[in-house]
Amino acid sequence: MYHEYISASSCSSQQSIATESECKRLPLPCQVNEIMWVLQATFHAIVVRQVVSWHFIHGAGDSAQLWRLQLEQLQSEYQVYAIDLPGHGQRPDTLAVEATVQDYAQATHQVIKDELHLNRPIIVGHSLGGAIALTMAFEYGWEPGGLILISTGARIRVHPNLLEAARTAPEQARLQLVGLSVAKTTAPSVTQSVVKEQIQPAPNILYRDLMACNTFDCST
Image 1 (spheres, rainbow, N blue to C red):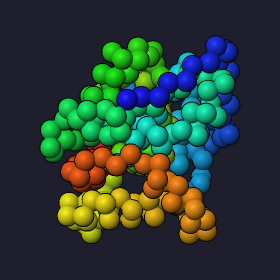
Image 2 (image 1 turned 90 degrees about the vertical axis):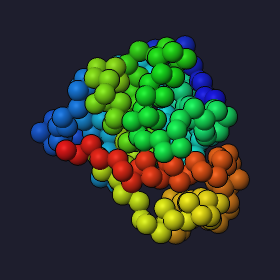
Image 3 (image 1 turned 45 degrees about the vertical axis):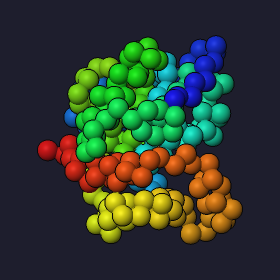
């Protein structure tokens, strides 16, 4: 249901690659000491000093397995966790058929507080996971220690064709998403490996996830 890697080593300070004058401050209630904007693809990060733990949230139709390599890389220096969202991977589905990002955020917050007992973790979110992370920052104030947002935004819209495919042909939509997530220069074997490693959710889950993304908007 979630992957846990705990290191006994103390956590080191993180350094921003941008100066304070180069950083854009965001109106997030969580306390952050530095903001780092990495101008590659759609990756934006908010970094705090003295990291205690990292909590990874996967995207639409995916599972905690997505973060396997990141967890392996970071486990020697940090406490790192990755969970399956409700209805994904090994976690039972406890949400409504038409769940929202806020529903996912509430479920994730419960896991962090009641199962993992984490204190102000850095929340790392990809796609839907990034929307969940943003929602948690606004809903739960000081609890998140910081955010790392990957391929996400304050307002997410999903192409109508992809939504329709997720509703009528979820497996086709899943393969399409995998294809969109890798560069054209990526070896076919890598794409095949990603598909093989994914734990396929129930047929309705991908559509629910994408609809949650499509209606998400915290920009106002």
